[in-house]
Length: 138
Image (cartoon, rainbow, N blue to C red; front, side):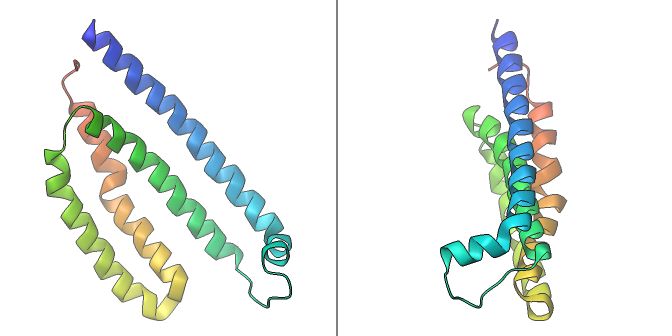
């Protein structure tokens, strides 16, 4: 019975994960298309702007967070917190090094790229791997 409930929970999380990723994609495209209007609406008379690349990188980072946070929620709900003790410091260190390396040359885009790279090299695959290795009962 517990195995069945755990399977249902994981199935639900994966379904909502697809919804979250689709929402991130749709909203990112919408912001790219309407960014000039949004800047004028939110900051009338301002000369600030944003490139499509910056908005796309923000969208990619948000999508990576939707992915990783979904799997992190499963692990936290099952009290598998010891895993975070091992991988989180490495992820943080990698992110810091990449940001210090990319930010001087690429500014905000470098910071976003560093966050995306660090997340992809660690959380994007490690968290689903850990969830798939969990015993099939809660």
